[in-house]
Every structure is written in structure tokens, then in C-alpha cells.
Image (cartoon, rainbow, N blue to C red; front, side):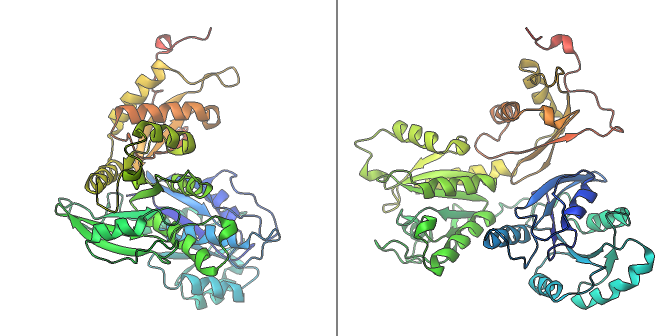
Length: 459
């Protein structure tokens, strides 16, 4: 399963960012005594009692942003809520129960994930009685904590641990059965998404028309191929933000993004007769940010197959989609169904890659070889040390490298290590999430390459 996310939610200025910093043990989120400081999500991979989970801080619900970014903040909050395994609902003991707290509680009411209500700023036991009003929010037991006085941190972490999904929980399906793969079909308008969806369903499930923007909502289609179950999510065509005048276009964009987040694999549809647009690049970036396996699908290829070699389009796509160079490329004709089955089979292969687990020993042998071939560049006249790595999640494959100084491992060197992992393991065409963490003092495992004599020396 993916690394579970523990999402911190609440109205503005209840101490959500302070809570993240306190639990993480380091200063990550900006903390100021005014509302609206946190806008984007801030996340941190945390380990407690040998379990990994991501802490996610969000903006204050109900805050009117001074820079007119309220809608952006709301999008980030909803994205975090959609992906949450546990929600920490934070309230302020000193301020007491406010109407906005009740609005937040209403928003969380129908969620099917555990919610822990935390009364922050409970600096002493004397004011714990003031938390009784928060029981009206309907979240059961309210835990008083204080980030400044370090009250009940271990209690809260143990409560989180109790509610995390099982470490080996990859779904409720029979381990011997093929899991159902969810595919999001995305792209700008009129690139053939609905025609493709109809081919999959073998029925006229979608309205197919030459009028751009016919599909106005995301629609799930269940089908089988060679005995394997699939869900295809057809989505509205995306237009440039300047062209999104109607509310229906605005919500269509959000539904398409939600389908990407729900998907196991994304098919990004492109029109072989059209140039790559800004919308295509924005979609590609969003898919990359969500760490979703993706196939770049060049549709209507029959119109160009005789005049343009596929190699030229491959180079063109690589030049335009630099964040997705690992993604495979498929050339299909949706109208006739040519290469559609091969596309689905390739999607199934990416799905399997994203669910693979690599033994820690195998991963560290690979890292050892990569570091011997090219050690980390010097940082402040010292060479950084990488002690060991481990895989902590799937979908996407999530790796953690423990080192003496995470800041010393440069981005280019991280890309080099990810390239080595792709080349040698079965992650050739899927995104990989990489975290760097400082090794704890109690962890005495040796450096991956402890024999410095075997490492290339500086000139």
C-alpha cells in the first residue's frame, strides 16, 4: 500500500503547523500568530515504532486569503482530505468552540477514515476541563495537547499508530487474485478520450461528438480483458485557465484531477495532428506531482503514420515532457481500436511495477554498487555518507535513504541514484518517491560503502 497520510485539519490559527513541527521534531512549517500563513500542503515522512507515515499540514479551513488564493488553498485541503488515512482535527482550547470549528466538523462528518480530535494549547491540566465543549463536535474523545509544553506527544503518536492501516495491507482482495486496475483517461478536449472509452466498454457509453467538451463529468466504466478487471475513468477535456469561463469547466477540471488522484495508471491522451499545448504540459506536471504511472497516448496515429516516423514524435514528447522521460509512449487509433489491447496490457505492466516490493538487501547491494561507481559529491569539504536504504511503500514505490546529512545529497545525485534503481530493478517506467533522512544516533548500521579506499578519490 502507499505510505499512509496523516492529515492535519482545522480552522485558521489553531496551531496546525506547530503540531506538524512538534510531531516531526524539526521546524518544517512556518509558524506565525496570524491566520493564513500555510497555503500549500506541507508533508513530512515520519517514522515511529518502525512504522512510516506522512504528516501533512494544510491551510486553515474557512480562511479568506489576503492574496486571493482562497480557492487554491481549498484545493490543497481537499486533495489532502481525499488521500488521508487518518485526520487530526485540531481545535484551540483557549479560544473554545467556535462556529468555524463546527463547520470543519460538518465537512469531516461523512468521511470513512479515523478522525482524532486534538485540543491544542492545553498547556496545563487545569485547563483540560475547557475541552469538554468540543465533545459536541461528535468526534468522541478529545485529546488535550500542548506543542509548547510538550504535553501528550507520545499519547498522540500511539493513537495514530493504533489507527494506521495494517503494514501489509495491500487491499482486501484475495492475494492470489488479480487486483482491479483503475485507469484515468485524461487530456485536453477533442483528443478522442470518449471514443477510446466506448471501445473499452464495447458500447456507446459516452457521448462521442466532434464538438469539444461533450463529456462534462468523470464517468467510471468497468470492463474485463482476458479475464482481468479494469475500471476506466473518462474525464472532461481540459481547457486553458483563461478559457475556463463557465463553472462547468471549472468543476470539470477538478473532477479530472480527482480522477488522476484515484487512478492506478493514467493514460494522457494527445492528438497526433496537434502540437503539444500548455494544457498538455500542465496535465503532465500534475500527473508527475501525484507520482502516478503514466502512458503518453498519441491518438489518431493513422492520420500521420505514413508521413512521420514514430521516433520523431518520441523525441518531440521527450523534449516537451521532461519530468516524464521514464513514461512509455503508445501510438493508437481509437476509432478503429488499433493497438488498444497492447496499450491496456502495457498499463497492466505499469500497475504491477508500481506494486512491487524490493527486499532491503537487494536494494542496498544496488546502492552500494552505484555509490562505488560514483560517490556523492563533496559538500562543505566533506563527502556525505549514505548508511542504508529501504522501501517503505508501494503505489508509488517509496524509498528512504538514511544518511549523515540529507542536505548534503544534491538533487542531481538523487536523480543518479534513482536512475540506478530504474536500470537494475523492475521500476523502469514508473515514478519513484525518494526521501532522505538523518540516521538516528541509536542506529549503528554501517555506511553502505565503508571501504573508502575503493571509492574514486578527488582530483
